[in-house]
Image 1: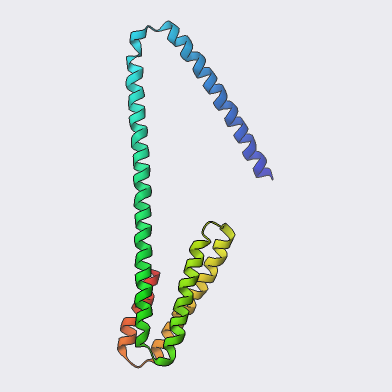
Image 2: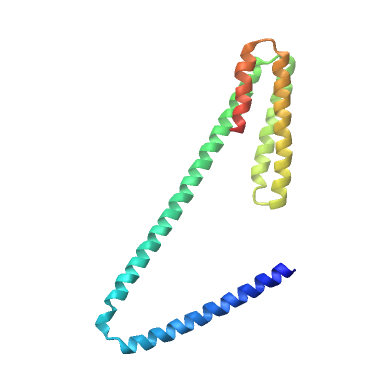
Length: 169
């Protein structure tokens, strides 16, 4: 409660300070306009143009950065989808008894990932879903290692484990 009152006090103080600054600046501008001749406003127009140009660059760089972050996120999602698909396809290298349970677990993993992204807007729901998702990640890893140990071929360990591990990168 005390933090709210401090924040409210700072907000009110800054609002009053801003209002007073605007009024003082407006009065000073009117006073200066009367005293200064019309031809001396050329420097003000140059400064105004410079400020608007800098503001335009700031907006352009902001949009450029936002677009780049959006593209990076899209590429990461595509890489994750491809890694999950490869891992799902490489479950065929495991023993027949392990294949069905591993494929079911990978489908559950994808559903949990989708649910985590859908809950991104909800603060508490997202963290709860993320914790469940992390548990499922560990379960996938443990079951993948156990399934590879059951399989006696090196191809399963050389191809399946890196495919499972690629999801985490």
